[in-house]
Image (cartoon, rainbow, N blue to C red; front, side, top):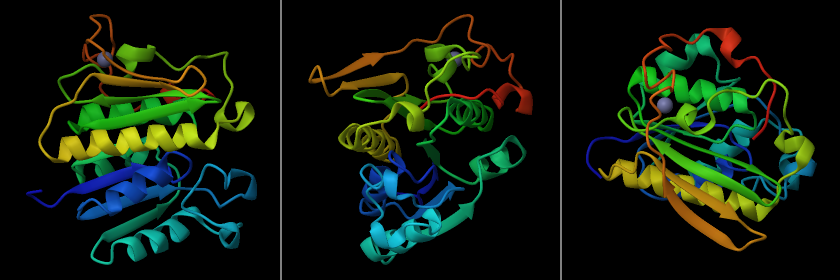
Length: 235
Ligand SMILES: [Zn+2]
C-alpha cells in the first residue's frame, strides 16, 4: 500500500469486530474507532473482539488493546461517543475511508450522507437474524439512499430486538473488510452490493446504479441536519 491509510471505523460491535481485526492485520497504518457502548455479555457471541473478562468495560478501550496486540505498529485512535452530525465532517475529512458497522439505520444514513459530502468512500453493512448486506459507495457511485431511500419512520426491528446470528455478522464484517482493502489498494468497487443469506446458503454480488431521484446523489442533501437522523431503526 502506498500513502498512509487512515480508516475510520464507526461501531465496534458485531460488524466492527471482524472489520477491525482484518484491517489491523492487513497493513493499514491508522485506525480510528468510534463507539459509545460497553461490552455486554449477551453480545459476546457476535462481538468477537471481546471476552468475558471485558464485560462492563468500554468497547473502544478493549478493542484498542486487542488491535495493538495484533499489530504492534498500528496507530489506533479511539473516540468514546456516537457518530453525530456535529463532528462527522471533521472526522471524515481526516480519513481515507469510513467503514460503518453501526447498529441503527439513522447512523447508517448519517455515515452515507457525511461520506458523500466529504468526498470519502464508505463501506457499509447491516444484518438481521440470518441475513444481511454489505455495500460500497464512492463519491461518484450509487449511495445508501439509492439503495434504501430513507430511514423508515415506522419500522423497525433493531438488531438488538430481532437478534442477529454471530456468523452472519462475521461474514458481513469480512466482506466489509475486503471492500475496504480493495479501496485502499486502488480498486473502485463503488456500487457493489453483497448479499448474504445463511439459511438459503447464498452469497451474491449485485451492482446498484445511481437513482435519478436520490436526494443525496442529486445534490439536494447539502448538510447534516439532525432531524434527518432521529428516527429509530434497524441494523
Ligand atoms: Zn444516491
